[in-house]
Structure formats: structure tokens, C-alpha cells
Length: 557
Image (cartoon, rainbow, N blue to C red):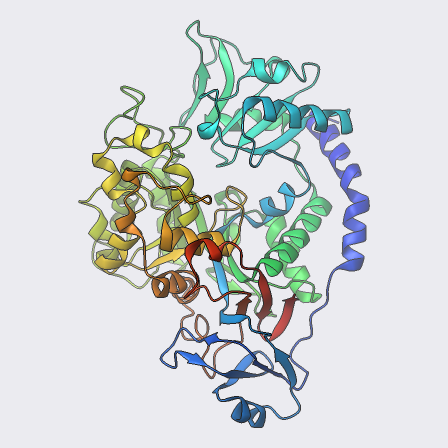
């Protein structure tokens, strides 16, 4: 048994009991054999021409009436009456970019989300090490840009807390991670270790590794990363599903999916314990099925295999995003290209052959340009209906911005990234490049399809935060600097579409999902406050009151 196997077994033992208990408690959802639902008692925004209505009637998984309450009751006699109690209903909210297994794993491992300093990171690490006295320590969630120390954590910071066993703590964005000296010793990484293609091992002025690994360099850490086994993944996906339903999500676009993930999800759907509707984009290592057969759907209709997810570059926070000109705060450095051009085009051609969708992570302006170039090489530069996507699309050269609409490429963006990144983006980019940063309104004005997501577990995974960030572009405590380009905010109607109808269009299902209309699937989200009218700060105080996916109640406050 290898070191990695032993560590995986330890991780499994720690979570097996919880996994078994969760399986017994997992909800089973009715499959539409009840008399239906009539929903009323609050404002209902249809997101369609009908505007606001009094009631909605549902039979099975379809909406059969939208309008007056009395007529809704006649349309669904004997239906269960759902009183919103003053809450406000919308078409089902969809997270257009989430790493679903990671959301669940975050609930089960060392979380560093919200750490305010290196000192707090050390404190959390110390507490976890005390409670888990053996094995590798894996954690995730730190972001250093607000820390008083003003720097990345290092091996020395970790050694001061845990020196006798490997520690690997990943940055929130997943594009960088820091390890302690024990990890470097186990891996044999030292001053003479070269950077891998598409990655960087940060070193100090003396050439000594600081412990920080960026992008593809993190692959070197795989021997000491605790890999969750199938049972742990099943528990993680169940936790993520319940958490997301409780936050008001009815569906999600699940990115970088592994083969175990898709098999577990299909089984969860078959046994009626999966609440959300999921469209999946496979990691290249697990893309054999979709690249052979093209898109498919499981018998329940809940789990759809859509395409593949590729990576063009890294992240802005760890300076891995590929820029056309050097970083303003790191002279001569232009970031990292994670996937070689020839490999990118090869996978795109395979996907095009079977009409699978392609989603590509691209953050920097060079990353976005090269991705658009590769897509044009495969599909041509004219508009197509393939609905290929660029995930994040955070920094775009003004020259490239119109190409999204011109080529029919979806911009899949995360509003919450802006209100976190804009604390440090000006120093990374300089003022001129901010014009094309997090340019939601400009993309919409150009005619591009823009859908919104969270990138959880990079971000919290809360639809209210995404809506708030899109319409207000202030931090969660109400701060915005003069260079945050508030002119890129969107209207509330646009934000609603970015979280409902646009995600449906992104997967080619706008005729079936995205608005509350007769004949469409009954996906509905209700919040305790009307997001279309309350003051921005009040958006963050709302709670999910009711979540319905395909006519099934998956959450009710």
C-alpha cells in the first residue's frame, strides 16, 4: 500500500460513519404522481411576458397554469396548496458554474474560508491537527489579498504549526496551494527543481522553495493529496445537493466532473435522492464517454452529460491568469498557459465531431483571446449555435469583447469574483486593463449571452450574493473603490435572466426551462424578500423560502 493509499484509507474511515448515516437520512422525492401544486400567497415573477402573477399551478413536473388564483385552482383540482407567506417566487435559480463535489468536500475537511490573516490560518490548522492527529492535512479556502501580512503563506508559516507530517492548503481559487517542509521533503522538491509546463514553484531570493505551487505545479503534489474514495464522494455530493436546495438553487452546471461523480449522480437520480437538475462537463481525464457518444441524459432526466471542461490559464489572484502584457505588480511576468494550443484544438475537434459542448476556463485577456482563437479554428469565426462557453471571462481585451456575440460563445461569469478580486485586480492589471475586467454590462450590450454562477467552493455558492454583486458591485459590507467600474453593473431584470433563463439557453433548454410559463418544467425558487425591489443590502438578508425542481419540493422553510 502506498503512502497515498494509506492516507486515503484514513480519510475513508473518518467519513464512513457519516456517509452511512447520511444515506439513511437522504430525502426521497416524489416523482409527479401527486395531484399537483398550486402556489400563491406572494409576488410571483415569471421572468416572461406575463410579468408578475398571483398563482401558478403544477401537475407532475410541468406548469399547467399561470395567472389568477381561482383559475389556478380550477386548473389543478385537488392540488396541494402552497402558501408563500409573503415570500417572492422566481423561475428556478441555476448555478452556471460549480464544482459540486468540492462543495460537499468543503463541508467535510479543513475549511480556511474567511481567514483574516496568516495567524488565523495557523490557528485553524492547529485546531484541525489536534482533532485529527494522524495523516496528511488537506485544507482549502484561504485568500491572502485582505491579510495584514500582505503576502502568500509559506512553508515556514505551516512548519511553525505542523512540522512532522505533510500539509497541503489550497487557495480558494484552486489555482495555488501551499505546503510545509515535510511535504517538500517527501516529494524531493528543492532549489534545483524546475517549473513544470504551465506551472510555477515559487522560490525566495535565495532560490529556496517558499512552499507555494501554482497551477500545473500542483500536480506534483498528488502523491500527498488525500483523494476521496467513492463512499466519501457519495457523501459529499449528497451534502452539496441538500445545501444547494436549501439555498434556493434548482439546478447547476457541474464543471470538471470525474467518472466517479457522474456514476454516483446517476445512481442518486435513479434512487430518487438527488434534488437538483445537473448538467455536467467532464474533466478531460474522464471524457471518454462524452467524446465517443456526445451529449446524453439519464433515464430520470436529471443528470445530463453535456461536454468537456478545459483550462486555458490560471487565476488572477495567484498571477496565473495569462495576460497580453506583463502584470503591473510583477515585471516581465505574463501568467501561465495551462493547456497547450495543439492539445486544446485536438479536444475541441473531438467534441465537435459528436456535437458535445466545450467549456474553457479563461481568465486573463491572453487566455481569453487564445481560447476564442482556438474555437474559431475549429468552428469558424462566424456565429454558430454550438453554445460553446468561456468560463469566467474575467479580463477581456476591448478588441476581443465583440467576438463572444459574433461567434455565439457564452460568457459564463461569476459576479462574486469581481467584488472579491477588485481589491487586488487594480494592482495586478493597472487602470487601463480594468476597462475589460468583469465586464458584464459591456458583454450584454454587445449581444453576448452571459450566464451567472458561483465557482463554489471557490466562492460560497449563494445565489443571493451573486445577484447582489451583479446589480450593486460592492463588497458584502458595502464598499466599492473608485476604480471598481460600477458602470458594469446590470439591471435587476438582467441579473435575474443571468441566473435563470440564460443558464437554460447555455445548455440549449430555453424552451423547457428558465421562465415560469405554461408547458415548461416546474422549477421555482422563492426568497423571503423581493430581490427586484429591496435595497441592495437587504438582498443579502433574504432567505430561501421554497425550492421546487421538476415539480418536487426540495426545500421549504
